[in-house]
Length: 372
Image (cartoon, rainbow, N blue to C red; front, top):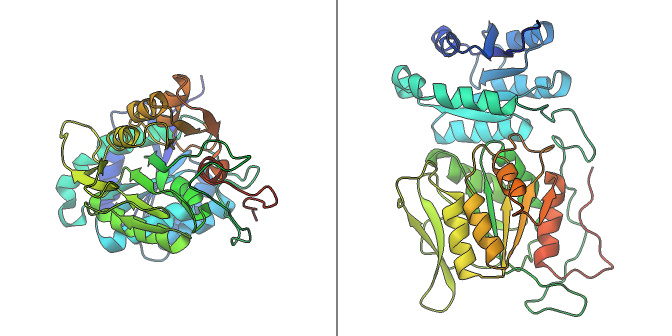
């Protein structure tokens, strides 16, 4: 009988890290470490020769660093790669660049106390390897070019109105987007398509550490036509702005004294697995914007967002789930789709356009995005 274990390659310049990560799988029957590599160049050679199902890779390495190696791997030997990242601002920026290049996900590590921290990442790494390899991962280019997909510069004009014009369907007043594993790349495929005259605020939750959310918001803002910011609490939400939950706080929308709506941040409830929680955010959006909220659930493990999407649907809003083919992990979207909560199940490259259709009255003479 053929060995159906997941074949893992570990790429790290630290002998300690190679041994430590390898030891995670000593008693794991379904994951087999088939090799370890000391730098990016060695990793590429072993990928070519051993053909692993998935690899872990450090970013900072001699001879050839992780980002340089990742570019070559994605071009010549595409497979899922999980990056090991330091919990620092520079580490966050490098990790986000790696995700933009096609890395499947990342595992944060605290280099200042690695001997203790290494034990904490074991369960997370094992669960991510299993989830990511559970289906054929869409690294090879598909129609519209999923991994390398990028919108061209905006060459179209958008017309919108806060009232329903002739020929326009009911429009949403706020967009709530949640994502987890694979989410940074998915969100990066959606938000840059939104035009600067977008008539609704966007609330974002991405499961990631606090050190990462600020750099992620900055990266998104630099790539986008709208302003993306890490929420700090108390902001009055405005159209054409996106508010990203910080990595250690739940984000909610509440009524403001002036009749508008504001961002609220809190550590409560403390008993949830994820903080920030997608569902906490979406439930507040459904309460403040009944029948006028658009919920979007993207790739990720688990079922966070299910209850929030359900509340948006029950309030009369609209719901979109990412499809299985373009999800790194079809967990959160699957929970929503299987329950019949999603109005639409779409590939990631269509979700940005659909968000525009749901919120913007577009003159029929104009086209939406085109792709390279």
